[in-house]
Length: 336
Image (cartoon, rainbow, N blue to C red; front, side):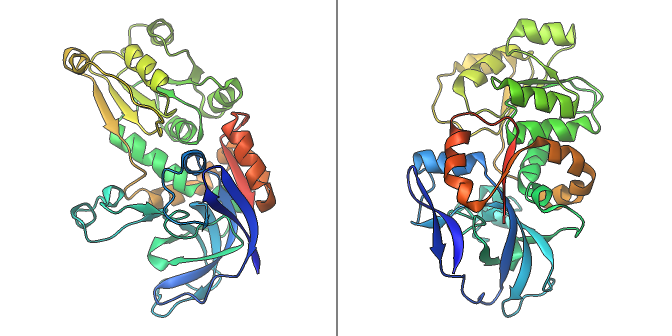
């Protein structure tokens, strides 16, 4: 038997004693989980049931693990390899998959939802979802590879140049990681905004960013006559998006990566008259290997961004803490 945090229904996650995973079938791998991160989408699923397709299901799609058993036909991996997981479960047959856009798969699902995930001592997954990592990367840092790939995808979708000022609304995991990645090569100001002063201060400190309010006056004060042509919406708040839209310059592009819980009314003429662009960002495309390659160089900064290290037994109470907005850092990591 082993321990696992399993989602049963809306507002119902429990840490249970469950049977160990079966022998991995052909093409699959048994994994001993080292560390897992709690994602904002985990909390959304818990609160809304948006992606509950099976119950109970072991949650967790951001995790690092060690290979302990290989199913028939698995090549490229050996016992003892350390790996991180591609969170996306795709069909491989639809037009999006066949044209290299797996994040837009017509039947897209995620580890921890359509199959058991990493909030457990052990799990099994298809080998095609695994990427090797350096043995020297600490387990809690390795568990941040997947959200780092999401942040990379956001930056690439936005096509922000090193000399272009950028405003990031939301200093949660993705917003904070966008700021961190940009800080390593960006020459222009990085502005951040968040109602959580602790998180905003932490991201500003780690990324060398400036905290601003989401108002035109605050942006002008920070940038002077330089136009704000690039922004990231990472809060999922309709109010924040409306404020951000009013704070950017004409011709700006806004990358949307937050998960929204409400709809908003927009005047299409706003986009015509001001030539604004909204750019949707769904998970990531092919950025996970690049994110894995960044881990050693970013390890010290990523460590500073960790909010708490917890045990598997602490998951339910930390769901409540995170939903209540009491996080001071960016990522709560489960150590196993």
